[in-house]
Amino acid sequence: MNSERRTRILQTVPMERLSAWVDEVGRLGDVRRIKPARPGLVMMRARETVRQEEFYVGEIHVCESTVSVDGEWGYGVAMGNQPERADGLAVLDAVFHSSREKWKSLVREIEDWLVAEEARQEEAWRKEFALVRRSRVDFEMMDEEDGGPDGRSTI
Figure (cartoon, rainbow, N blue to C red):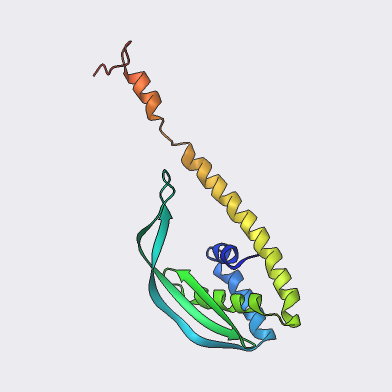
């Protein structure tokens, strides 16, 4: 699992579960704060749908953190004022980048949990999208219903 996918999933997991993984890493290894979580701003990119060109929407507030776990550095960034989440993301990032044998089973456990969490998040998104979609308005249909025999408005 790549870092981008992992971070996307971890941005919305319950903090209690993320903290449980961080506590487990702290129990098994030496966690040191290199740069404690601090606020920052980043430019948010978006893609225009017709020409598929990227552009900057504006700035968003983030918290970013750098830690080391058994000498392996990790970086975490969380949207909004979430210093604990940024620290947690940095700790897991360090573990995922470590090549030490002691972390391999924990990494597999976390990856399995992340895959299940991703499926849960996608299902929740589908349910929310279905609710929103029910309120979708078809403007072409409204024009047809509003128009007279020649399609022009009768108002």
